[in-house]
Amino acid sequence: KAAAGQRDEFQVCSDLPPCIPDSDCILHEWGEWSHCSCHCFGIRERNRYISHFATGKGKPCPVTALKVVEPCNPGPVTTYDPDEKYASPIKLQDPPLDCQEKPPVNCELHPWNDWTQCSSECGGGQRERSRTVRTPPKHGGKPCESDLTVVEPCNEEPCHERVCTDCQWGAWSEWGGCSRCGGQKYRHRSIVQMANNCGKECDVRA
Image (cartoon, rainbow, N blue to C red; front, side, top):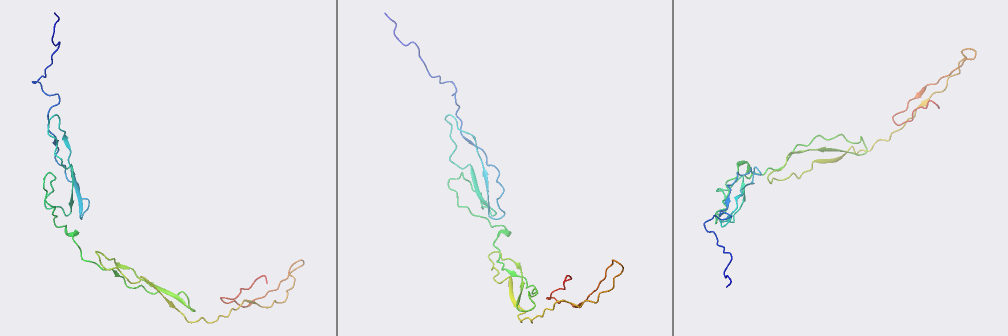
């Protein structure tokens, strides 16, 4: 009669440790707050990370933030805790004194400078004067609405008609005698009328 039955048998070892140990997720402590992004009404942040992930049948980390951002200068009265299930609304401290609302400053102008010289002595010219901003507007103050440069006519009386006088040569003198054999003789003339500022100059080749 042939043999009957199983050749091999298997059984789970209950007394051995698991291949993957059971360990819970571990969150690292919060890092330091960053510097405030602005002297007035800025933000800052801090971070944390998972230092150990859950293994085996360990508990996972709760659904929570790894980074928080909060206002600064002014900051909250109480630090926001993302691990709280029902966080209260953020209440801010009073802002720094130099960040508080400042009174409006209106624009102010310097006094007028002196008038420039007229562009023409007669027949109508123009002159101008200018001024600059002494205090620009701040904190919602009123802007300057007046002119910074003004132009006005000047010396509008008609110019007198000018008479141009040309330069005039006088008559030639008599020829002088020859200086020597094969030499030369000469004569001369003088200017009898000089030209004024609009007349023609004398031409030495005329």
